[in-house]
Image (tube, rainbow, N blue to C red; front, side, top):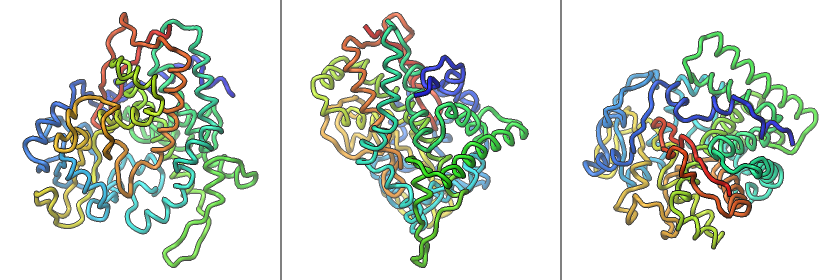
Length: 428
């Protein structure tokens, strides 16, 4: 195991700070957004106007290339319907987002709908199913990375788990799982965020970032074609894509590279933030933490409840392809629908005491990992990472608690990515 996982590298602070991330995007929201979601949802389940318009938040950049009117879904009923019906509420909208197009360097499953999406997703899905996540991913990468990070904390009295653990474990897991080396994780993430437009890069910086990504992924794909390994790229090389006529063909290098960009960006970012939110939820509620300590069978419930209670990405957008009625509201073709899952996940029509984090509540499906055809591809891998991590904390640090002498952690960021400013703890 390389020491890149535990290295004192300043790039961790630069790449995994929610305030910096938001400010580089041109905005930061430090309010509790749930109070605003509640107000909007109580007014109507679906409303005319983009979510930002309804919240009176200035648009920070031109998100879409084509000007369109916007609507926002806020109730569980409306958001659940929109996520499940990807033909009417289409992911092809991502093709109109310059940042997405630049970052992924080609078409990915993110932009696809219908049969095309099912055929391409079938090449990736087998490596991310729950049995694979809790065996192959755990045994190959997760267990060792968590073990090394826990070992690096053992001699400390205090730690910031957001920076010293949550930021590190997912990015190294997904990077190594794809097939890159451990030392490549931070260089790849830096370049990919530059390509996505974070920080307003110059054309020269964007071009260099693109070259860095292509060099790292391209070299790995070529190497794996010659000498297959036991990783995602090798799996994609061995997989054949079913075409519309039923024939099959290998994936091209570009198809493999574009989807690996997506996997690394999502896997290294969302799990970092969601694990921090889960730790904060538990550590700030000692009774909940003790219930989990006493019954580890509640582990997945604790993770699911955190994703319901405060999902790191509280809204996504879709293109409405035909006139439709959504939760009783007429929505015209051609508009953008912002799906506010942050509001949906606290809909009192579905959950009692919806604002409470309660890992003992009866489970009902939520939208924290989306739902329907585009449910998070890496959901099971993220859950496996969090299960292993939380179990390790409970095993190794029986007195783990929030540090009363540190500034209180805050949930901040942007609408597209919310996370903890820090998770300061006493380990002993």
